[in-house]
Length: 263
Image (cartoon, rainbow, N blue to C red; front, side, top):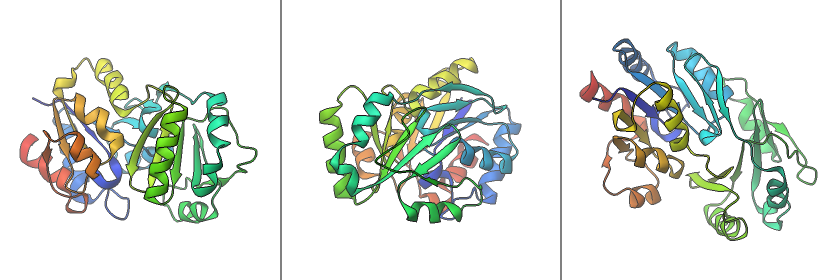
């Protein structure tokens, strides 16, 4: 029996409008009422995740920034890991940074060097807005995640450059084709879920997880039942060919699967 459900947000649970649809909310509330644990596991910032959890009104563990922060089901911080400042300084000084949009997460802030990202953030209902920073004088302390936005080919080249120059000093992952994410080594949703499982006195075998991006690889490969979205990144499907593929995020496939198999 699966006692804990870990779920990605964008491209998995959320609608195209970046909200949890009513049917999905109802299913999660039914799961909570049955005594099961629901865990948000996302690359999003905690402030965004907390906004969604408050709308849901169900106690949920929150794995945010791809595992760089973990909050318990009462909203208390239990884990946080920042990127080494000296390594980050070297990364942000690379000439290739000029080809992409650079975004930084601090525990309580979202920083960007791109005006279009600020405009995008202002349209969000959570009220968590990006602030401008100067790439020539970037903040280096307490950066829990960096993400780069840009052309898919440019980001793939950047990924290879970073893997070559910093082979053991970073953890890299694509959340979407146009978004490459960077965390401290060892940071992942999978590692974070292990902390949650221990706290709840469960095992990974008792966990079910849903995801669509390469940043879901570690979590999907460790749980008792990992499920891929129909819209999952091709690299994720290739990496985990043994996993079942369900419907798309815009079909509320997660909620339908949970209703059919756990309720």
